[in-house]
View 1 (cartoon, helix red, strand yellow):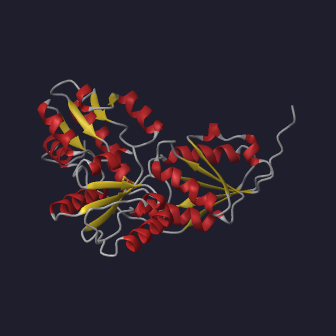
View 2 (cartoon, rainbow, N blue to C red):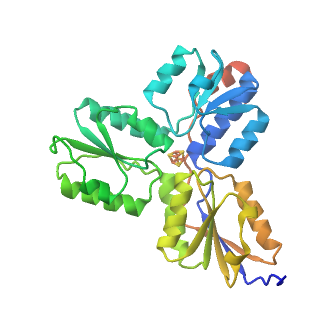
Amino acid sequence: MTPVVNTVEKLLLAAPRGYCAGVDRAVQTVERALQIHGAPVYVRKEIVHNKHVVEELTTRGAIFVEEHTEVPEGAVCVFSAHGIAPSVREGAAQRRLETIDATCPLVTKVHREAVRFAQDGYTIVLVGHAGHEEVEGTMGEAPEQIVLVQDEQDVETLEIDNPERVAYITQTTLAVDETTAILKRLRERFPKIVGPRTDDICYATTNRQAAVKQMASRCDLMLVIGSSNSSNSKRLVEVARDCGTDAHLIDNAREVQEEWLDGRRVVGISSGASAPENLVAELIEFFKARGVEDISEFDVVKEDVRFMLPKQIRLATAAAAPATGAAL
Ligand code: SF4
């Protein structure tokens, strides 16, 4: 067997990377629910799109199900960060589930926009990926009035009864540049189209893509830690490749393939918004074990966004420690 010759000399770590405020809140919600209610706590869909997070919470007593109908009547059920259609909420109420909604507040914002535009009689163009849980949840707010477009080609063939009354909204985890092009084409086809007051692509998606975009040209290879069903992680790989840099999505360090590293000197590392930092630390250790010592952060944006935990969790926490205010 040919011995491995390490050519990697330098690691650049994208900043920001990894957990966003919505993922942090969702994961904490399940952890707190387990503390408050004890196992099992049911979670509809993967709480966030990361298999390590799901495995870790499973070992602590979370049970992940695809639909609320799989949850025993009256049990505790957490809704994932990606949001749910109103029909799911209604179905859960009929089963008397004790629900805790971990939908990211930035996804809830998109739902509210959908409801507002629908009430005002608009046809709503949702830019997003078919089959993604966030898209399914958002479309469920006004299924008769929302049409999905995934790319510029879809815009070309879009037929809308009243082009005078069209609105757009977007999934939160899209590629920024691609979405800009789609929205430009939408405005050309429907000059009266209206949109939300502020962008729907969330700060975390935008910042992680900006960091990868700025550092990609300095790297011979980009490794993005994230699961294959994580939309924002996949977009990071695409952004790096669009910059001409070879890039791969990996769940963890064990998935790095030797041939990717052959002849590469600078390796950039980023991680999707649902990927825990310990997976990045393991990847760094992988390279340290190969003798890489030059490791630095590539700082692009500082983030300080935090979201409050869901109301049910806050109330239960306060009730458990009324005198001291101590956290559970
Ligand atoms: S990626 Fe954005 S929208 Fe999704 S959970 Fe994180 S902050 Fe919320």
